Amino acid sequence: MARPASNPATLVEQIMQEVDRLIASRSLAEGARLPSIRQAAARFGVSKSTVVLAYDRLASEGVITPRRGAGFFVSSTNTPLRVSEVEPRVDRAVDPLWVSRQALETPGDAFRPGCGWLPAEWLPDGEIRRALRRLARTGDERLVEYGQPTGPRDLRLQLARRLSASGVGCEADQVLVTASATQAMDLVLRLLLSPGDRVLVDDPCFFNFLALLRAHRVEVIGLPMTSEGPDIAALEAALRQHQPKVYITTAGPQNPTGATLSLARAHRILKLAEQHELTIVEDDVFADFEDRPSPRLAALDGLERVIQIGSLSKTLSAAVRCGYVAVRRDWVDPLIDLTIATSYGSGRLSADLVLHVLQDPAYRRHLGTLRQRLAEARMRLGSELCEARVRLFHQPVSGMFLWGELPDDRDATAIARQALEQKVVLAPGNVFSTSQGARGYMRFNVAQCRSREDLARLRMLLGH
Image (cartoon, rainbow, N blue to C red; front, top):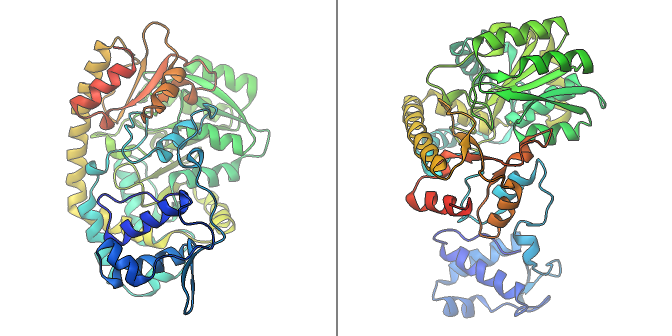
């Protein structure tokens, strides 16, 4: 498989890419001898030391094999390059993992209005680089040893303060640092559920909830969403009929609709949860997108029946995998045991990096700028979608998503398949829906549709 090219590639990477190309095209067959270091240096117009570095890296990856006194040879472990293995499969079933697979596997120059993250240039790379430099100057043990299964205490203190700012009162010993919000959700589901149990989710909801619940072999029941949260009548009916153990929902701007929970509806949800002994898992990964926190079930409940999870991936970096879970005290030890059983310890480097960034005053300024940019992008894309006759579910007051119904009874899945052939990743509605009742809907990431060219391309794909 060809390695992704850097932009621009270093001289070492250019040599590695050329060797990859020659092997893939069979110009260099299995067992063939590569040009000598002197010959390669002359061919590429580089120093011999540059060729040595390139060959050493290729040998480390198993692409070529050095033989003392004889040179470098194409390894016998290489497999033929197939385009179907390099590019995402267009014919893959459009299921809850479809958007993630396409967004992660399409080439770097793809247009991704359906992905779930911010553009790289919107993220605080300066703060991350400063934190990395500080970490590089720390003691060796921080770079090589296992982290505590709970995560560093200083970071847990910082996260507890952040939770308190949104009304979720808790102590540091109620917070566990995880590798991501997804890992936090997986740990909680391992703690609470057994195969065959029933779980409530919003309909539509974040598609990875559905994929994760499928892996846990539980029965999923959808609750229709409104602009103020789940339909309360549907919630009451589901609780009476199905006796679910857990309800998974999103705090703040809901994914994919952008809806925020009203205070009255939050109180009603918690009252019903108490009556029916329901545990609620509240995903708060979008907390930093709000200027003023909307109602949090965990805040109103005091972490009795509500577990809250989150991460910094959305506003800091998806490459820094670090999440958290906040729970009542008697659930902490079982979660620690599950952490040790499934991952042994926390990701120490990521956790320390996140702590350094959170302590940097520039990160707070970054969040202010980010919220303003998102507000402008929501208005801009909302206007474009309305002109394309896309009917918005509602106009969110925060976050990066718009949820809209396409005109003329159009099939969002069919459009997404066609768009993928043009290296455009869209998010069709039914990947978010347990009832499969969102055939004509799409989720749009406003931050990924920034330029006039992006907007024009999106409107063309939608048929306007």
